[in-house]
Length: 354
Ligand code: SF4
Image 1: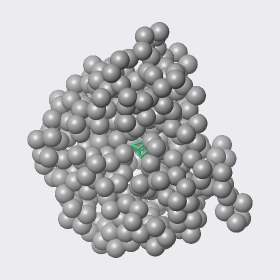
Image 2 (image 1 turned 90 degrees about the vertical axis):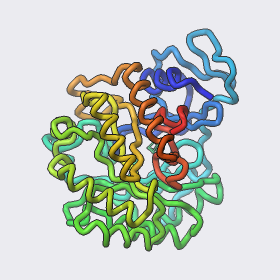
Image 3 (image 1 turned 135 degrees about the horizontal axis):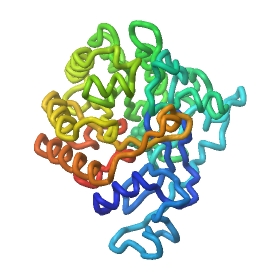
């Protein structure tokens, strides 16, 4: 198993490797190449100046191979990327491979928060649309078609569906339910996680999602300190922390304990002790805090504003303390069934027992 200090350094400094599976721009805080290190999927920045490299199945630091690891390799390009719908839309524009077994899609590639003053500083959801690498809206039928092919051809084991936030009271969750329903009908055994902001009437909306085959839900707050939220996620910060707590609680009622998660970003300036204390409250609620390092990614305001990633020491410290909380509660990411915590590739938690 990779040591957590190595995992943190890889997350922050990246790796030199030719990675055929890359997620460029897009929703949320990650923008990485996908590799597998000793059986653990990792999403890592591809950085030409990193001291880390992957060559011939080994991980190197400068010229020195790291001993004691199993196979290290970039994830191969999946076969479903070479297919297209009857209308000629490449499947690759509709959903992407994450890690080696996760299919991920952004069902609506626009977001009401994407104004310059309101967007999340780490997000580039509309940049991949502007670059022509994805479509504005994926239809339920398209997603069912791609999911069926990805399961059949590439052994996909779960689907993550996120969305930009809509102006409607459900914030886009009802459309996620329609998409999930179509996928569930096509591949009934495929676990599905959806990600959305807290909707109005969360219990009813979440039940609709569950009835359409959704296994788990991510309701991502990213920062647990209101002042940090207002700086980093000014649009989303208009939704109060109390509304998030209510949505998490209702989600646990519907999906169950450890079937609900939230991203918590390390490196936005939040006090580490307060961040860990906030994660402890989430764990008490049955909500998995998916702790991920902030990395400045191309196309985001954070890059334009000169933001930098956290120090490895802070990342290792926070990740270790949150992993201890999760272990004490008996919560594992894998038990989410689907979603980012089940995948684990964007976090160092998976190498310290989270
Ligand atoms: S943790 Fe989430 S965003 Fe990261 S690779 Fe896995 S599914 Fe994708």
